[in-house]
Amino acid sequence: MTVLGIETSCDECAAAIVRDGKTIISNVIRSQIPVHAPYNGVVPELASRMHTEWIYSVVSAAFSQAGMNARDMDGIAVTVEPGLVGSLLVGLSFAKGLALTLDKPLIGINHIKAHLYAPQLEYDVSYPYLGLIVSGGHTILALLEDYDNLTVLGATIDDACGEAFDKVAKNYGFGYPGGMVIEKLAERGSSKAFSFPFPSLHKGPHPYDFSYSGLKTAVINQLEQFRNPGYESNAYNIAASFQKAAVQMLLSRVKRAVKELKIDRIAAGGGVAANNSLREGLLNLGNVQVYLPSKSLCTDNAAMVAGLGYRYLMDGVLSPLSVNVQSRVPGFRKAYP
Ligand code: KG4
Ligand code: ZN
Image (cartoon, rainbow, N blue to C red; front, side, top):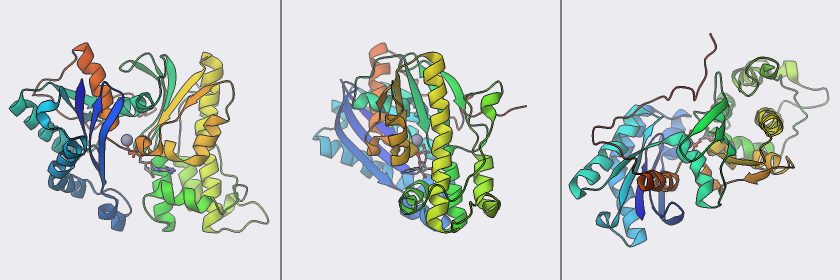
């Protein structure tokens, strides 16, 4: 069974062809980073316009790299939620056009579930397992029963982890996108230069939730307050200390979940899962099998969409041609009363 995946939820225009939910036959990603870099962040209006311009050539490239055409597909999977509405609509409308004209099954995909599926493209991870999704829009720790059913154990109550990387980088003019540039700067700095505050959510009724707003504010607005004697306030030290705190927050929740739920498998995904410091931290947890997708499958891609699409296709779970997009999904971000 061969599935075409289309992903346009944010600033990557991507198409991929995957066989039997596992074998990546082609995987095309055209990044809009140069388009958004002058603004230090994704401009939604520009993102949807670029997807409109690029979608045809990106999908065509996925077919030509695979030596296949749309008629060879058994299904068309496309991200429908969560994400930027204008961007999602481009991918969905294109997928609907293909599905309608070629009479192929259409499968609407949840972007977070697709990130959670990404490790299955390279490993056979048996369910249940813990899934940690850390991206520009989400920070979620979940218990996965299978590819479709999950319990969100914790989520961010304010900024997402990747968003904090992006905002800190933007504030200090480090460059865009923030995650990669901060990781690069951090290699040359000391993570001991600043001791940033840690939210004490673990003491309350939501021990697995995350909060990045306080850390972001401390790094941006109260920097000197947290500097340790003998260390300079330079870009390298700011990046290294911030990165350490951001990663520690993730690891502390994961450690707790591993212990309390007695679960010995964890898989990570989302753009921040490409961060080496997080990857090392997870691999060094001990007593737990860690599944980390290749970096190119951590950031947004359509192979994870096609792979997950195959699972739904096998179970006969299809979407009608009237399926719509959604910017948010309840429970994936939290707001305390
Ligand atoms: O999953 P993704 O590609 O798109 C969303 O669904 O949001 O994640 C993008 C996020 C951005 O915030 C970016 O700064 C962050 O992932 N990111 C990283 C790294 N690479 C990308 N953060 C930390 N270290 C990295 N190496
Ligand atoms: Zn993503």
